[in-house]
Image 1 (cartoon, one colour):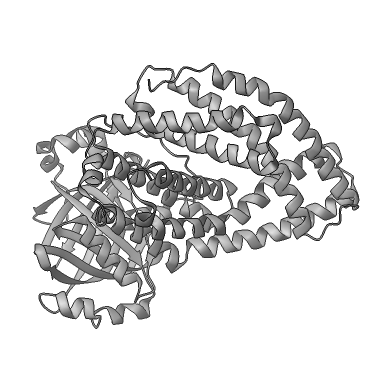
Image 2 (image 1 turned 90 degrees about the vertical axis):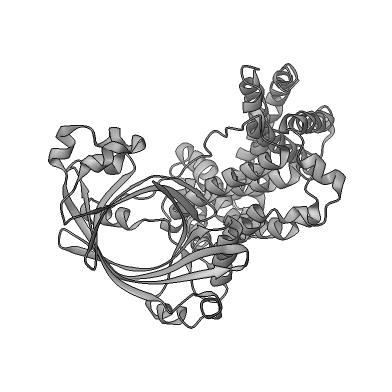
Length: 510
């Protein structure tokens, strides 16, 4: 078994010819690019059993060689994919599944004789591959390949035009550095759909991509504080990018919402670790994340306004003419906002953002300006940092929340941000304190956050009405503002109960 670690891009056909002439290739390639014609046949059961298990099985013909390959689903971070891969030379175009029996990780997947009996070829990929072996200082070896051809299944086909970078020897930072450098000179876009997945897509009815909430974060208590920081950044990047296809597809508003949540979690992580990771060390990263959040935020504001406020009003006043006019105007602006979000996520800048964070995260650039004491703090156990951090975050929420009746709109917004940061901190570190009541604590914080979020939505609604050019005396504006005023009064009456629930929770980290 080997571990395949790569970053894959799609690119226009006319950009392929430029690759061989890049200074990066001329300066680091051991030889001229080698060219090979690869024909791959993928196998599965009629009910796609292997695909459901995250397994790809193929036989590749490369010249006079026949190679049987099994790949399993892996991990993704900032565009980099890592997966397990097994390869065997076979005498011809016939599967030899007995070869899998000697591999404990996949033996069970192929142990069922019924499965073996019904495996059949489903689709093929046929492409020309050009390969360059790039060698860098410190013995880093990266394989750069371009693939140009097509995937074919059931009489249909789709083109292949890809560039891949695979680390053969050396460090992950070098892989990110090379990928980032290429995005500066070629029109590259991260490609997360494998050739196998594209083959299956030709066979079955198209399924829109689905949005994903952040998965539970599991943190090993043996990690140092710096290792925990790196793990959190990676987890947030996975959450961010797994929803990018949903935004580009443009039909499910939850994709924009989840990407926005991921950007907030990333920025919260940078803020939470600021006692150890100086602001100056993360300014560039934070600025790019803030840009992305801003581009996505417009669409999210219109989603909340239309899908929550206007939809609720329409249910109560279905024949209100001014409300219908307002809704139509808001929908038109939302379409434009989604177009901006789609262009943003499909843009080279978004690709560079992910890869730039990958370079920063794996190279640990924050260490450069640090003194010895700061470096020693990074090496301290994460529990030391987590307990102090949660205590500080909790205290800040208490300081602002206990004076809630006197808070201005800006003060309530500040309290909302503090609650959000406390909740994210709790989610990042809760696994360090099993069976401690942490889930109840986080639910109480979420309760405060929901009320404060609703109060903030009322302010946003007023701004959006202004952006639409709706005058305060307009009947629809009266309806919206009256509704929001009633919701605000309701939220204010519920705050005391939510606050008392929060204050009654034990500090799970102590």
